[in-house]
Amino acid sequence: MHGNVWQWYADWVGDYPSEAMSNPMGPTSGSRRVVRGGSYLDVPTVSRSAFRGGFVPGMRNDRLGFRLCISAQPGASP
Image (cartoon, rainbow, N blue to C red; front, side):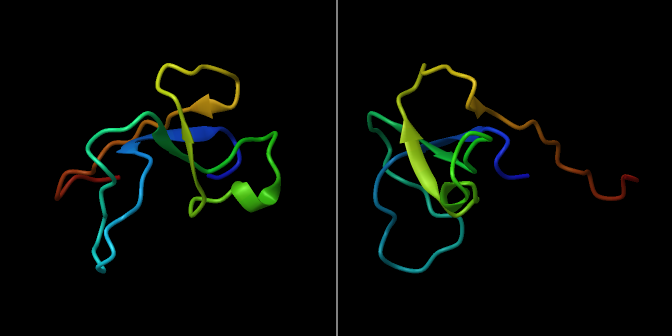
């Protein structure tokens, strides 16, 4: 789901490592946390999961949120 609200991530804003990797992590500290997905008030170019922005932790407004998810246990029915 894209464009509903910006989704907070645990990563700090910064450059990814230059080598190819799966699920790269950003820096271990910083001043802004990564957000993705855009909000309902943003233009389409930023309302996609590949776009990374950053907001200061503790910032609150109607464009920010988070998504709850649960991992399915092996053998569990949906």
